[in-house]
Image 1 (cartoon, helix red, strand yellow):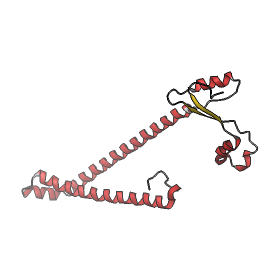
Image 2 (tube, one colour):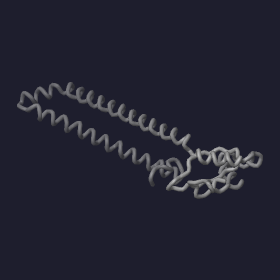
Image 3 (tube, one colour):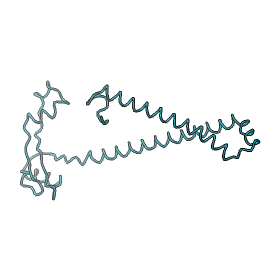
Image 4 (cartoon, one colour):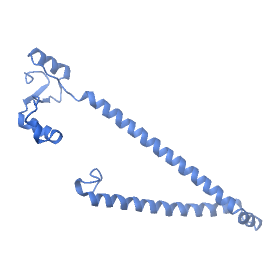
Length: 178
């Protein structure tokens, strides 16, 4: 019936064993024999001019078959919207974390300057320019940031490597590269 529709290059009915093999991971062995398994048809569309779900549904209705055409468009849009939402949430979490880190750094620098006010006044009285005092603070906090960033990166790499090692190729982190 579907093989003669324009835009369909091949239509093949799936046998019961193949349909059961698709359902087995979710349903288990015991109940499959008792369940009515739906008849499934695999349709390969012509890539140059594919038939629409509406066209396929009409062809099935004209043949007198009570069938549903699932072209994945119903859930495809929901998956895309969910992925976009997750991306936006991840971006918001990153920006919140970056803002919090910036605020913590600003607070730490101000506290460091305040704690060393006497040293800064002494340096200024002995002829140090504001730029040289600022450079000393930038160097100190830059080295601290570099050390902390390196330690965090090494820790993250070690944790991911450990998770990958513990999980194997199909274990805890199958999406991570080997």
